[in-house]
Each structure stands twice: as structure tokens, then as C-alpha cells.
Amino acid sequence: MTAARKHFLAVGYNATKMRAIASTAGVSVASIELLFGTKPHLLKAVIDVAIAGDDEPVPVLQRSWAVAAQATTTVDDFLAIVGDVLQPAEERSAGLVLVAREAAAVDRETAALSRQIDVQRARTVAWIVDEMIQRSPLRSGIDRDRAIDTVWMLIDPGTFIRLTRDRGWTSEEFVLWLTDAIPRLLLPTPGEDDVTRADDYVREGEGPR
Image (cartoon, rainbow, N blue to C red; front, side, top):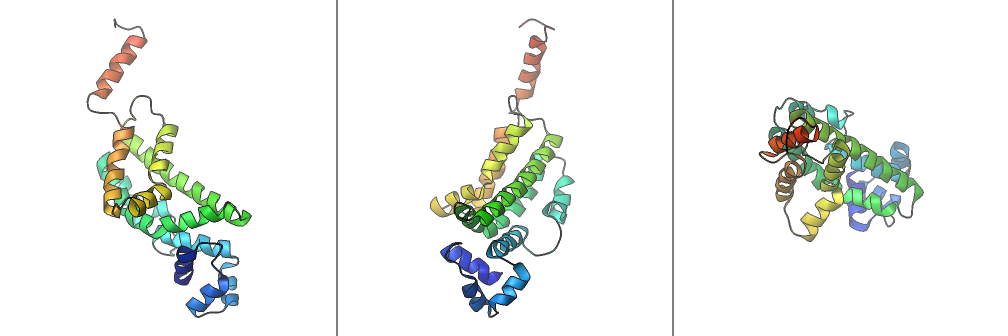
């Protein structure tokens, strides 16, 4: 898997050959196919390990960091834990996810893999938003679906790559920006709750404007 990661990142999906991976790893192509099957399945395994940080069969949202995040009482504390986990996960996996995304345009099996990765990310984003909602209402005009779409875009691997590789940000700067941007975009500003409640009061006909 280390050899596969090296080749996928260096030359992309299409140019990566199973025999080159086998040669780098010092094993036979048959051994790789026995363990992983096809090249798309190998890429999926490499991405899964990159996201999680290991190959333990424990779902990401059932790991100890997720339990610790759920035990927090404020959005800031919750996002701090999420950010601490997201930073190394993006460093390990963002480039690989883009490899799969680029290959999806020309390879049907890889396209299915890319969609599966998107579904997994959507579940994680929905979990983040739902946990935030338990700690704070969303700002006026933002519903759950819009909040999910917003976080979805902010943590997209493409966003991470563009900012860290193309704009020169460090991954630490990315996470600081992310954990600052999410509450700014989704949560009420100071005093906004009072304004919203006053507007609702007027709209319901219970008092003068």
C-alpha cells in the first residue's frame, strides 16, 4: 500500500501500473491481486487507510476522537477536535482523492469508487453539522441541507490542495481558517438570535413592527 500510494501520487492513476507497484514493494503482481483484486480496489484501500490513519476495522465516526468530540459542550470545542483530526487526514488523503476524481472521468470502475468516497464524506459532513446543531442553532436563513453543503465545500480535498499547494498555506493555517469559517458562516452572530426572535414575533402578528 505504501508503494501504491507513492506511484498514484507521482504519476496519477492511469500511468500507475500494477507491475510497477509490485516491483517497488518487492512482491508479485499476483500477490497484490490476491489481496486487493483490481487497481481501483487497491486505490480505495490506500485512500481508506490515508483517511483513517491506519487499517484498523473501526469506522471513522466510532473512533476515540469522535467519542471525545461528542462529549464536548460547545461548538468551538467540538470543532477543535474535528480540526485536529482533519488536518493529518487531509494531508494523507487529499492528493489521493483527487487522483481518483481525475481517473473517474475515463474509468467506469474508478468513477464508482469516486462516488463512494463522496458518499462517505457526505456522512461525515452530516455528522459534523448535526453535532453543531445540538450545541447551537443555525443562523437565520441557513437550514441543515445548506449547512451540510457549506461544510462539504470547505473540507473538499480540492479546496485543501488548492490552498496548501497552489496558495502556499500550511495545513495548520488551513485548519485554523476552516474552524473559524464554519461557525462564521453557519451560526448566529452575537445579537442575531434576539433580532430573529423579534422578527418572528412580528410576523406572527403578536406585536407591532
